Image 1 (cartoon, rainbow, N blue to C red):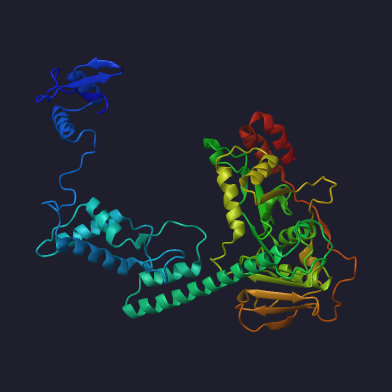
Image 2 (cartoon, rainbow, N blue to C red):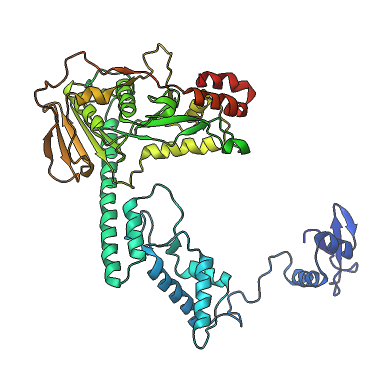
Length: 520
């Protein structure tokens, strides 16, 4: 409309009764027909626009039914029937949540399975209306979705997820396919109890971090630096660590997916993260399948890997604390096993810590700060081209300020690289397995009671003391003894040929030499 100018009064200064317009395009005056053709405006639209312009000038037009009810609008009874159908459908197939998510207000959500879409619910609604005698008038799909959004927004379709809790899924299926209302109420009560237990452990994890943060803030600035410190050199009693494995990375990786590479098995790079939340630093330990304990990446996530990295981290990236606590997930092969517990007992018994606590979250509800840091790395990884381990390490450092990388260097003479050790065999000669380890979630080790562990199923219950030292064995081990060093497993001939013949060609030419060095 800015190129359609209304001419003013007549030459004699009178108000022009038959108004005239001047049309311009690109600084040139053109006719009305050409102006309508350029802006793709029909005759009737043009007349309506001109009539509005004569009366209101340059102002947005409003629909004539604004604020009024249309003559063809659906009645209140029809809309009420739509809402009632959606609620009954959710009662039959939905999973009610015990409470509103944190930070929100309103009705607790009800989740429908991810396979049930709004279109599918609408089809069931139309079918029910047609089968009723006499048939009921049904609304269209757009109106159906608008009513759903405006009237029952708490009924939602759950998004597909991975790594979900097994118990939660079992309870969801039991609630969904319950044959009676009593069974449905019983399963819902059990599901709520399970969720509340997971929430309590989550709150305990947050309290541990908060307590550690408050203690850290009271330190002088020169004592807040992570590094190599004399064990038990600072009066710190609440330092908190979290550790976990990330999903492995593949090399080479390209942001634009190369078709043949999708069907191959690129070089795997494993990542183990140890995070000190209050210091806002997570060390991500990177090693390839050639640097793993087992051949071709086997035994890459066993207890010897976890303990070797934890020992290096507590030696080179600590605050010299006297007491500390750990949080990890419930994976038995990696974290929650006899070897990790034996190592914690070894640290307190040899004077490296006065006390250590290790806590494991509810299975399926184990997300922690490590997963958030891994997510930042994964976001940048998807958008980047990575050919070598050094490039991946640089990417980890760029992903977030909290993320730091540490690459295993086999031939390095530096004291700051870590080594693999046979911790499980070394400690098993002195300590015996803990019976019923799976049912306990909280473990405490103290220097005053070497070789003993204090266990709890719930953090607010009474501890149970259990002795771990084997009969007729002196504990702790003699001073200066240490587990045997393990060499990296390397690559088999078949795997080496596969990487050289089928994977190397997808590495960008300037970096193929570095990639071949890793594959040796």
